[in-house]
Amino acid sequence: MNSDQPVQPSEMSDAEWRDRLDPEAFAVLREAATEPAFTGAYVDEKGSGMFRCKGCSAELFSSDTKFDSGTGWPSFTDPVVSDAVTLVDDDSHGMHRTEAVCAKCGGHLGHVFEDGPSASGQRWCINSAALDFEERE
Image 1 (cartoon, rainbow, N blue to C red):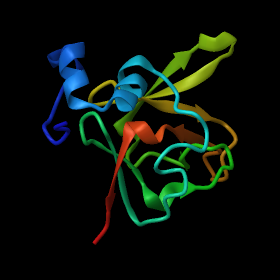
Image 2: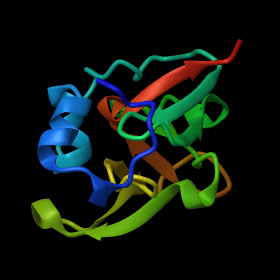
Image 3: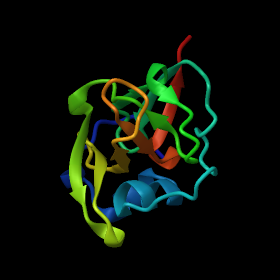
Image 4: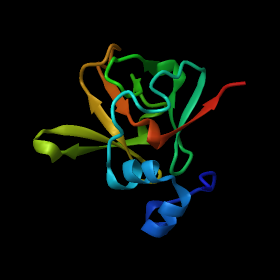
């Protein structure tokens, strides 16, 4: 796996993505799968640092905005910068949700809900499999 090189989604085939990502990350980032609740590596992460896209290394969420939502997925109040994540209407599974997608590589990250604790009222519910964590030194 080599996820430290810049990438655009149109530049890579599914085979190249499969070579770059582990199977769970591929399923989440490229096929919009969801990891089971309370199984992700970063659900209980309490370190200080930056959460990056596992597909392209883009900075997505600061640990300063992470909170325990009790839902079983890492949750954040806001992305590190608003244009790091693209929002897409998602009407799959018989409900309407707002999908969060990495703006740089187009990878599925999770969903945004309007029940968060901050002034924005948003809860960014993100799959651990879509993230890498870079701890601050």
